[in-house]
Amino acid sequence: MDDAPRLLLDVDGGLARITLNRAEAYNAIDLATARAFTAAVRAVGEAPGVRAVLLSGNGPAFCAGGDVKAMAAAADRAAFLRELAAEFHDGLALLAELPWPVVAAAQGVAAGAGLGLLLCADLVVAEETARLSTAYGAVGLSPDSGVSYHLPRVVGPARAFRLSLTGKVLSAAEAVAWGLVAEVVPAGRGLTRAEAVARALVTAPQPAATETKRLLRAAAARDLRTHLDDEARAIARAGASADAGRLIGAFTAGRRARTGAAGAEASQRVEPRAGTER
Image (spheres, rainbow, N blue to C red):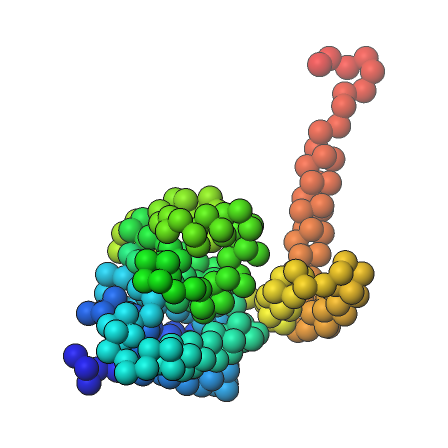
């Protein structure tokens, strides 16, 4: 299994699929996987025609986090962890900077760096089997992979401290309630559902979808007036697009048709004149 590719990349019909491929290791992130991930995300950013990204992991788990066996085998554990985190962080930063929506399919374990990956996605579809945790404390480590950055912003400080300091594991249902996951589906249906969501985003109006993602991602770090100014510029750009022109035209045409039908129906409901029988 060591000669199998640690990650699979496929771009087809506007959808880029990035798949962790270490099923036997629960898709744990070792240095080779981190490098492959960063290279894949960079390739997606440069690929023509991409409009959505799908993240998934082969096997029973989405991603169990950093490869603890590789950590244990390192001659200089501190140097190894610095290199591993730096390499993987490059990929995560590139992923967050992609203009297109990112959908993730999560099953089984999503811990540590795996949780960081989910936090970088815009929409997460989780199977009932999904279990989310920070996991760092169990091996005496502090968070990486953006977990300490994203988690308080998504679930709030109190819940972020609870997850990070107590080792709590979230069920799929809890992850939805806490805002980490968009929806839960039956076991074995996560990837199918996530791909359907991603495919729908491929056909979403442009640049509305990319502007929406950018605005939502930028909002937390801005004051309201700055953000409102950006919204005004963005809606003007979107409004000038061919997709907006087509959809606005279809909407108004449909409204005119509905209004006309309602008027015709109303003309058939004339009240009887005085003196006539009802």
